[in-house]
Amino acid sequence: MPNMKSRWNHFKTKFGDRRPSQCSYSSDTASVRTCESSNIMPDKFLSGLFRRRGSNTSLDMILDVEKETERLTSLYEFAVDEVNYAEDSLGSSYYAGDLETAREAIEECAGAYIQLFEQVSDSVRDNLKETLLPKLLALQEKYTSLPEVVVVSA
Image 1 (cartoon, rainbow, N blue to C red):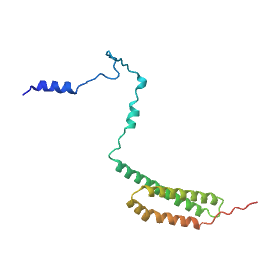
Image 2: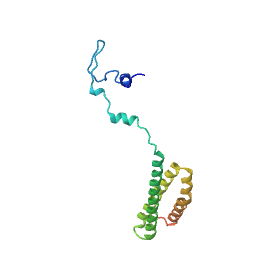
Image 3: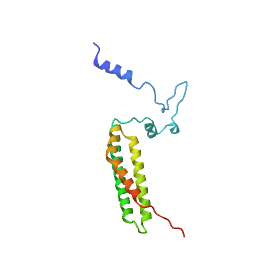
Image 4: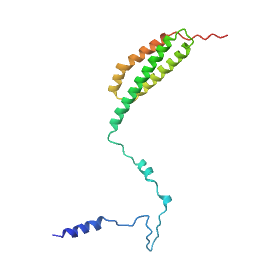
């Protein structure tokens, strides 16, 4: 049975450094290599090229859906407030501005709803249809029931 020390030496020499570094200044009779720093790419660039996706991608997506749902809820609450302001300012000089702001808030909320609806799974879509869609439709009805602004030209 061979000696353990000789096995270790065999392993070390077999898998050790077998050729000089490309940045060495060693030479042989055939060629001379030198290292120029302009030819080396930064590690940051290379690591960005070959980045592997994490195993928690589904967790990230769940967190994104939760964040977008919270954003959508806050947009809805903002739109409700703006429609209520427009309703309260009916007949005042602020009504036209409040009505325009309410329209913009509803459009932004509807756009966020559609964007989220297109990106989520079927179960989340069903949940959005059941919970938020009726509220959005009721808010739209309330907005359309408000009288339009009549512009009087001189």
